[in-house]
Image (tube, rainbow, N blue to C red; front, side, top):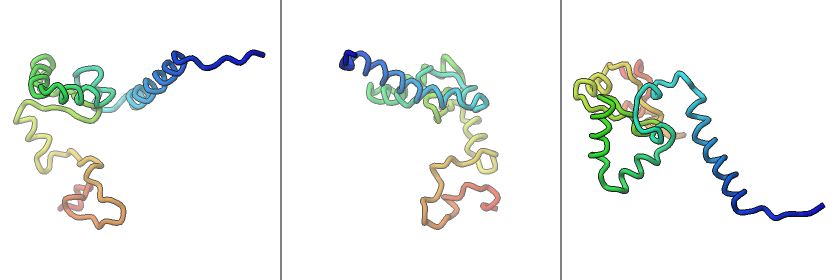
Length: 126
């Protein structure tokens, strides 16, 4: 039995497959995810790399403006980010009583008492 050392190309291929699976599995896991309905760069739907790249280039605003020209009012610019170019649409999404819930970003950290700002349940705001 001969023992061969693992070649660097094999390591790179394995790491690439793991990274690809890391981003593709969550993307296809929930086919009813509402964010998949919004068009945008394909990489933006999988990871934050697209947005990071445009920020590093220094022309994120211009790139997003071009995406709105190409795709319309709503553009997916990240796995959890939708850019909105119409002020009336922004009002419908962000206004009080719009029906949209806050993300888990606003969830109170463990041990911290909840308050109006950190409350995710709309019924408790009333």
